[in-house]
Length: 113
View (cartoon, rainbow, N blue to C red):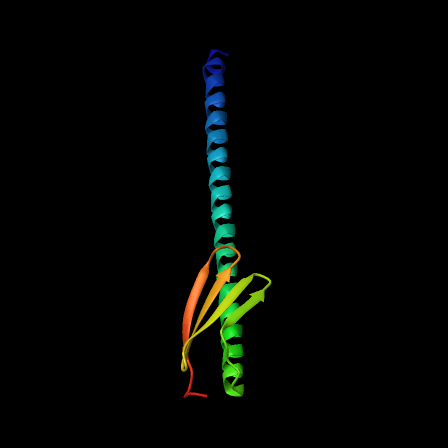
């Protein structure tokens, strides 16, 4: 009996250590998941920005082929795109995503129309 009384306190220490380990594990997993969700959101915004840029580039090239290319602004559901004709052969496209992310690209067109 005397031997059992000496080990009663060790169960409490083991339980506290297990609870501390589990709380650390849960906190770590929640931080990792939060970072993964943030990374997914950033990638989604980057793809949306790239899609707006590609669609505008295609529109600019189509308008150039028709001879009606002008500066202007396009509005998408996720932001706006500014088209600025710098020279007769070049156009600057600036994408402004609603999140604040921006991307700029210069397109050089073939010959003067």
